Image 1 (spheres, rainbow, N blue to C red):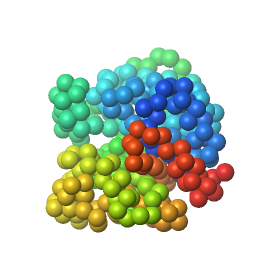
Image 2 (image 1 turned 60 degrees about the horizontal axis):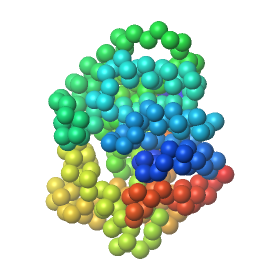
Image 3 (image 1 turned 180 degrees about the vertical axis):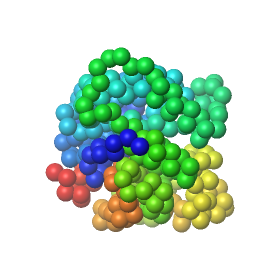
Length: 300
């Protein structure tokens, strides 16, 4: 296990919305998130900007906040390149960059990237071995560079604990956080993502939630994880999720209701909760939602 003592703060922002605006605007939003008091900004990698270039832009636009990839796709680069980026950004921005690495999904790897999608666990083991063996001859930063794995199931969680600083579970309720902490043990970092809809009308809130959930419910790793947690297949394939599932994955309501969900993750063992504020328009940057969550959490 790497040294897990990376301080992300209690709460961060997870968002893919910055990919829909110009880079100059994305940098301004990153600076605003820092001023709101969040400890970290988490950004994904799909078919938009290169996540490491975007992370560099976000780091340059801020001075204190950590920037984490949630997650970088291991199929996008060989292990030597990923390791070099991890070390380079850590040296340039000491202690402020966290590499979140994941196995991605078959439809993205095979269908979009045109690579062969191998078994997620064994493929990740081989990739981590290659990163450990990768040559890097430039100066290294202090404190040492850190990495976490996207992990849901028990084997990947154990791998995260054994080989990295910890885990970044996505699309999970607090019940999974409890399982993850028990599997990881007390020391590794546990940074969990939580979707949020700041809307009190049940039909409206669940409608927004279902729009965002639909793509994930069609992916085997998320569906299998939900069934491990006790959800029925009928609840998962039910047009964006049955009410019970929607309510478990997305915290909706007023600020006090959402805060209870965030605290439930903390009580279950999360060191850090990555808040993903959802809007009816998935391309909209949820500035007002970030402000409301900052105020509710007393971050500024």
